[in-house]
Every structure is written in structure tokens, then in C-alpha cells.
Image (tube, rainbow, N blue to C red; front, side, top):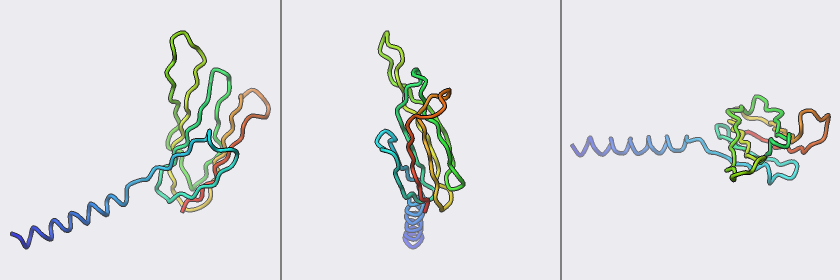
Length: 131
């Protein structure tokens, strides 16, 4: 019994270690803290979560240009802030979730602007190198 149990426990332990090393890591970026351009190295398979404050009631919103084949956009969502009683025009946090797929360079360009205005706004870039 001991001879069978010991190898079984050992192989189970190795399997759990191998499985845990394959877990997806999450890289979080707050775009509010990015001045203009930022570069980042990300291992393939990792998730990149970009969050940024916006206030849609002003007409301004963040728009994404990109990504390419190195990165896939998994989801884009708004997380509303608590609205105090009687207050209107409360902002929210926009969240982009990407997956680093293939090795290579990728530029994620974000613009905070009003869609009906011809130009201007705030421009920020994240230059990703997927390893």
C-alpha cells in the first residue's frame, strides 16, 4: 500500500505545481496615471486590464484604437460610481480587458474626446511587447 500511495501523492503534487504555474497573470494599468506614452513587457497568455475615469455626461469618452494580432480585446465595460442623492453627471470607470496572445509589439492608443468635435482631446498610448 505504501509503495503505491507515495508515487501517487508525488505525481499529484507535481501536477498541481505544473497547473498553478500555467495560471493566467493579470497586469493592471490605471490610464489616469499614464502621462502620455508608456511601454510595458507582458508575457503571452497574460491579461492586461486598463482602467480609466470618464464622465459621459460631459460628452467626453475614451475611445480605443488598436490592438493588432498580438493582443485581443476581451471586453470593454463601464463601472458606475455611487450616485449621491440629488446629484447628476457622476463619472464612471471604463475598463478594457485584453489578452496577450502572440509575441510581438502592439500599440494601444486611447483618446478622450467628444465624438462630434473634429480634433483635440487627450491622447495616451500603451506600447506593449508581448513576450
